[in-house]
Length: 406
Ligand code: TYD
Image 1: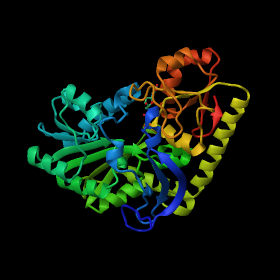
Image 2 (image 1 turned 135 degrees about the vertical axis):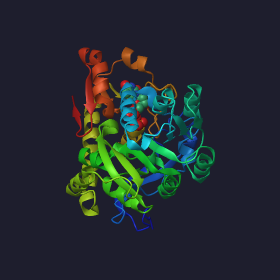
Image 3 (image 1 turned 120 degrees about the vertical axis):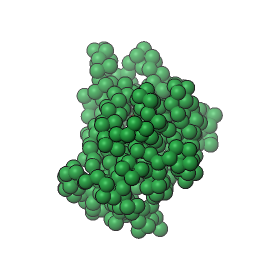
Image 4 (image 1 turned 45 degrees about the vertical axis):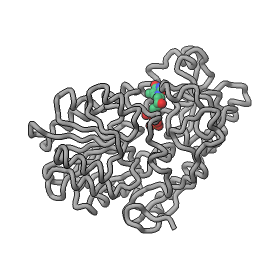
């Protein structure tokens, strides 16, 4: 039986995506034959309120020396992290001059460089060697490892407890999240805070953005589930702030229980989530109906365009797109190529469906009739950048919150 990774109770099945490859598993032709697939099913626990994958590939399969996600590829994300930094340094927990900061999953140092440039004592923990190397080359103190018992002991022995531990789009990737919370409890100073942000279940349900579900996203958090999880370790969720990044995220503020007064935001979000049905498996079942509808409409639209002889390309080979393409069985007959700015993805093929990945110049020189906006979470930035595509007669296809041509 599949059990909740937090409460140990049986999970209630929400959606079965069937066989899925790794979201970031961009692949060369010679490796098609060895491609890795896993059974992707999501479920919900009525006790912990945690929305989660039944099974996930081992983290070593996902975060390794060839990990293809570089945080600094988006201008908008750079600004977001700069603002996140500015908010964090104002907090009481960072008052002391020798405050020590730990980032879990520091990637290429996009966020930690703000602390480094102000001479904060800091340490980034990053398991993917290729991205960590970029941070190291930029003088950002980085340790190439997972955040686990060994790393926590290393931190305690070499740096002492932390004033601030933070993470962005990382905590939901960690299957053994109970162990993570136990280690946070251990290495967080008495007055310290643990702040993290991840895609928010509330947005996924509201917008039917089911593409947020892929191997790396073991969990989709809510205020309900994080409150429950923190309480198991005598930690407390005392504030939360909704973010527009990654198609809608939530930033959670956690302290040792009783050390900061819970703010009104918590009660406000709890009521909001009850209305959305995020605390209740029965209400969440509607998500399945919405996914099926979205899938049907996207495939029907692409087939119609193919029949008319239109050329359709994909814009941005996001990890999220892997779920869409594989669930909807969309291959290079329906989408001729996907353009992406990340070098490591270019000249490879999309996971599972093997659509060719081209560089950005290819898109500029071969405008399709339609482009499917896989990076819909960067819509504003992209639409602004791609005015010429529209001028030359191109059209966008979006699928969140509804499938349509814009
Ligand atoms: P993101 O939505 O952050 O991806 P994910 O679903 O993987 O979390 O988008 C990152 C990918 O999108 C990355 O491969 C670069 C690509 N991209 C472009 O090709 N062009 C763009 O203008 C943007 C913003 C992203």
